[in-house]
Length: 454
Image 1 (cartoon, one colour):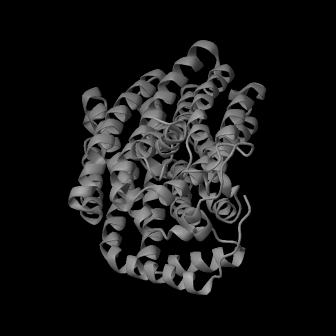
Image 2: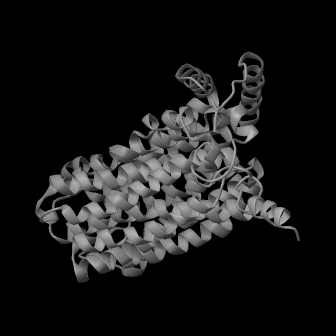
Image 3: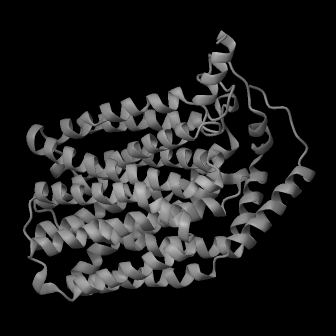
């Protein structure tokens, strides 16, 4: 084989648009990297705080702060749609930047003096970790919408969300073990080594054949990138408004916020409920959560995406949103069984399996509603709204626990998926796609192509 032909084959194999393996592997690795900061900030640290007798209000306040960057990702996404080093791809330069920020923010944990009794310092560092985690998330999601074909979206989301769940679980159990053995600051900072290793993935792959790996290497702007890259803020805002105001998109936005409240309530509830109500240690919680989440992640990777592909997004969303409240209500009325470890383990496993499957279906649905022209901004809007709900849910738990019993809190949570389940019945993907395709045709007519420099 000639040298030029071999180089061409290498370019194709490492390009996301030409290699299914590269797509599945790269996004799985990047979502694992997203799971690490979430496992630490949303689970390991709250469990550690609960173990050290911090109140539900204090723990909820910490989670509310670290949830803020995930809520305001929408402010970052338009920047990525507007500016990039196009010769390296539309979103890949931003993925690399976000990954680098994650490494540095994890290392910053070491500068906190007495983190257990320094809530301000802990919140600031947690905020930074969440900020760069959210930053990498926006860029990765935008790149995924750009390069993953529609017929692969459900399977890809199954792998992506499954590996993210596994990343959360492993970072929780390993992080908790390290906290208990070598101390908080060193334990959290040491996880930056794993994030640094994953940095090799976006450095090695390209979005499209012929693009530069780094600014100083050879390559050029892909034709498709030129055609889809918007070149003014007004184009981005007008295009975003045009697609988001469509009926199906608006329904999805509102439903995402509602289900986000459920996510936040349950994520904040589990460490507090299991440790302070049931008497678990933070090690027990991390082990149970990690094992059940890893099982849920593997099921999501190999079954979740397939189910959505086979039965359709709306049918599977309706099923999940019907079963989840039934499981929560049944648990709420079984107070006499809460101390039974088998029942508690089973509840956590069933919930997180259904949660993982639901997230896969929600992500795939959000991607299908996206217009590639503003993919990063639109998909981020959906996720940001969901994360606003998650942050609201985290903060809300402290208020609810002050005024209500655990049984009433579980019953309140069960109402939320029911509301979303009713709303998604009014989403019509076919009609939405017809509208979005008409926008694309209109853009090609109205927007005069401009020369984009490497």
